[in-house]
Image (cartoon, rainbow, N blue to C red):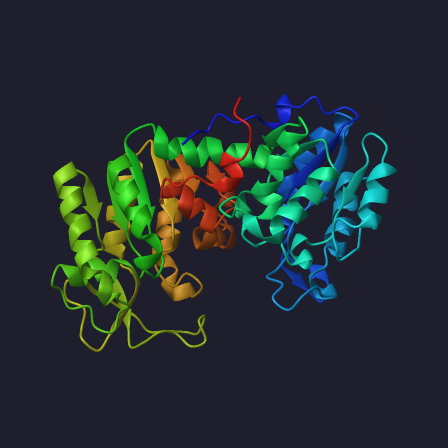
Amino acid sequence: MALNKKSVDDLNAKGRRVLVRCDFNVPLKDGAITDETRIVAALPTIKKLVDDGAKVILCSHLGKVKNGPNEGESLAPVAKRLSEKLGKEVKFIADYNVTGADATNAVAAMNDGDVVLLQNTRFRGKEETKPQDAGEAFAKELADLADDYVCDAFGSAHRAHASVAVVTKYITEKGGTNAVGYLMQKEIDFLGNAVENPVRPFVAILGGAKVADKLNVINNLLEKCDTLIIGGGMAFTFLKAQGYEIGKSLVDDEKLDYCKEMMEKADKLGKKLLLPIDTAVADGFPNPIDAEIQVEYVDSTKIPADKEGLDIGPKTQELFANAVKEAKTVVWNGPMGVFENPTLAKGTIAVAKALAETDATTIIGGGDSAAACNQLGFADKMSHISTGGGASLEFLEGKELPGVYAADDK
C-alpha cells in the first residue's frame, strides 16, 4: 500500500485554482444541519489554502440522490454554515449541472483567498458511473475549473467516482498536482500505519452484526495483529462453528466453515482469537430498539434455545479490557452489542472505556463504533476516530482505495 502521498503542504497554492473534494455528506432535517462534524473536519485544509492565497473551489456529494436532483439534498445549507465557520463568504453555485456556466463564471471572477462551493456532485447523475461512461466528461469539466486537486473526503475514498479519483487524470494532463488534505493524511497515518506498521502488541477488535461484512477484514487483520477480539452479533457464528448452542441469536450459517478456517488460521499463526465467554440474553430483540428489556447473563457456550444473545457479559468485558491494557496499538470496528439500547450498551461502553484508559494508540474504524464513541462520550479520549465507514473497512482489509491511490506520490 503506497502511503507516501503529496499533501496540501506540498502545494504552492498562491494564485492557483484548487479543487477540493470534501465530505459534506451531513445529516439534514427540514433544511437544517443536525451534525456538523464533517464540516468542522474539513476546515483545517480549507483554511490552509485560503491563507496561502489559493482560489478554493469546494465540491462534495450529499445523500443518495436516487431520483434526480432535489432541493432537499442541495449543499446550500453547507455553504451558509461554512461561511459562518470561516468568517468569510462561501459563494454557492446552485446550478444542478454542477460545472455549468454559473460555475465557470464564478471561478473566473475569483480573487486569491476566495471560496466557492459547487452544487451536490451527485445531482449531475454521472458522479457514480464507471469511468468509461460519461463520468469521464464530468471529471474533465471539474478539472477544467482548477489547476490543482486536493482529496480530503476519506468517507468516499473507496469509490472510483468522477470527483474522487477520475478527476486526477485530467489534473495531471494539464501539469497540476493531486494531493491529499489534512483529514485524508490523518487517516493514512493512523489507519494505514496501524495495519502496515503497528507498534506491538497490536490488538484488533471487531464487532457488529454480520461476519459477511468483515470477511476480508478478519483474514487481513489475523495476519497483522497479535490478538483478534470478536464480539457483537458476528461472534455467534464463531460460537456455532465450534458446535455450541446459540439459541435465537444472529447467525450466518453460510459462513460457519469460514469461521472454522479463521480459528484454525489463528492457531497456526500463533495469534490469540478471543470470543465472548458470557453473553447477555433476552427473549428477543428490543422493539423499539431503545425499549426497556430484561436480560440475564449466561455462559456463551450455554445459550438457552429460546433466548437471543444481544451483548457481551461482564466476564467478557473484563477479558477484552485486559487484552486492551497490554496493547500498544488498538483498532476497533463494530459495537459489542445493541449499543442503541441502554441495557445492551454495557459491553460497548466497557470496551470504549478500556480504550479511553489505555496509553496505546487507539483507532476507531468509522461506522457504528465511531457513532458509539460519540454517543457514549468517549470520542475525545481516542487517538483517532475515522471519518469513513466503508472506506475504513476497505483500508483494514488491505485494499488500495482509489481516492488515496490517485493522489501523487511524494
